[in-house]
Length: 192
Image (cartoon, rainbow, N blue to C red; front, side):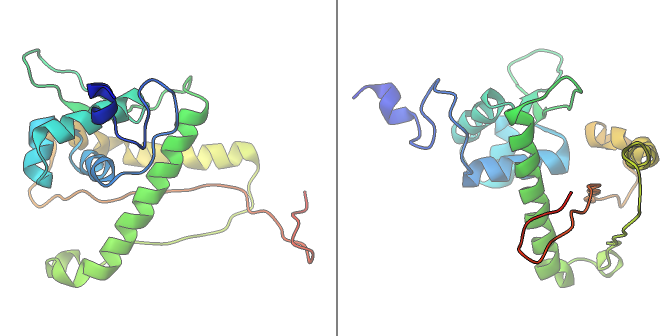
């Protein structure tokens, strides 16, 4: 057994390209990045209560598997990380796995909100959850998604620029899922 065998977690063999399994520290890091935008291993360690070495290791694992990337910075030893920026050319299983992980984090954050909302200041104790069904063509569905993106665009820079946030601003989950509803048949198979 080598030092690499000891230091490689058993949920991921080094260099094998295997899927990155869920892990408490990685989940906490992704949640933190979704909240604050960018973070170094030292900052993550301070906020999460883990060692900076452990945070650094898991940040590198997340980057190696395409979940996060190094954020632009002015040099120096500090390495800030951010969630991987979506690019239209990025297709394949990594994007799909990231989508599954993101939906899981969204669901976990929603459940945490439901159980802890009585503990937040009174002005934050409400939410704006809603859903709707609309009959759309694929082109119309894309147009609706683009309208939502444009409506959110004026607020997007606040993630990377904390000084642009007004007093009292908090991170708010903005989740929109547009997908076709599939019909069910009596025998459990879907009809086209």
